[in-house]
Image 1 (spheres, protein in one colour):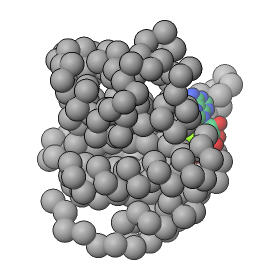
Image 2 (tube, helix red, strand yellow):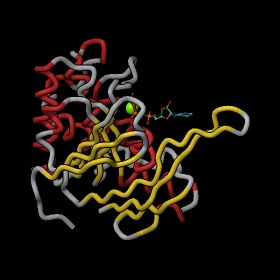
Image 3 (tube, protein in one colour):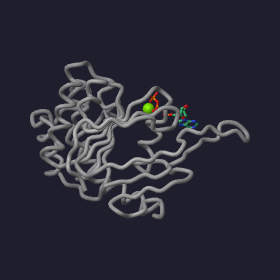
Image 4 (tube, protein in one colour):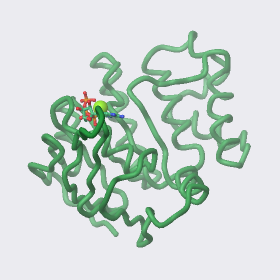
Amino acid sequence: MLRLTNIKKSYGISGTERLEVLKGIDLQVGKGEIVAIVGQSGAGKSTLLHIIGTLDRPDSGTYEFNGSEVMNLNDKKISEFRNKEIGFIFQFHHLLPEFTALENVMIASMIGGRDDKSAAERMLAEVGLKNRMNHKPSELSGGESQRVAIARALVNSPGLILADEPTGNLDSENSEAIMELIFELRKKLGKTFIIVTHNDSFASRCDRVISLQDGKVIGTRLLNSIETE
Ligand SMILES: Nc1ncnc2c1ncn2[C@@H]1O[C@H](COP(=O)(O)OP(=O)(O)OP(=O)(O)O)[C@@H](O)[C@H]1O
Ligand SMILES: [Mg+2]
């Protein structure tokens, strides 16, 4: 599904000084895989996820998605690509507080150019929140809020979901439930997930674990080989 080759990224920090954050990353992910990215704070995990999500551009390297080179697209095409193909889940749910769960998911659908209320309802039902659609974020638990964020990530039917510490802000019971949900969504909807996590038990249940250190891949652990495209 996607292939990154020799991806490099640096940030200007002061005057002429640059901080090299990604130092030549190679990564392939197949359709339907669940890949964990682990590594210490500052290793470059979020930076890598942002590049995969086209929220940030690499300095060099190539990024193929379903056979097309993403970096050749202009800004407009890149946003279209992102809206269509990629869903994001973050550590904090970032729901809009004055809107209900359903409205929060519908807003994402509108941004995706669909404005599809029934898709929003279906996704909320899919994440187990059929009876919480009209609750505002302040009327939802942490785990429920994160489920709304997952429904929001899925509403435009992206093939690839990127999650940056999706259980980082949850207690162990809610973390477990979110993990179960992610595996269930892969099984039912065939979604592909790339998940940055500090949670070892989560990582060890993924198909593959990529370890990053200081901007480089230092190890890959294959835990479950699935047939992918
Ligand atoms: N916009 C930026 N400008 C300058 N430096 C940055 C920028 N974004 C990230 N960095 C630096 O790049 C390095 C990698 O950051 P990144 O957020 O990718 O780490 P991470 O692996 O996700 O860490 P954590 O586990 O703490 O979330 C860090 O040293 C960070 O300070
Ligand atoms: Mg991070």
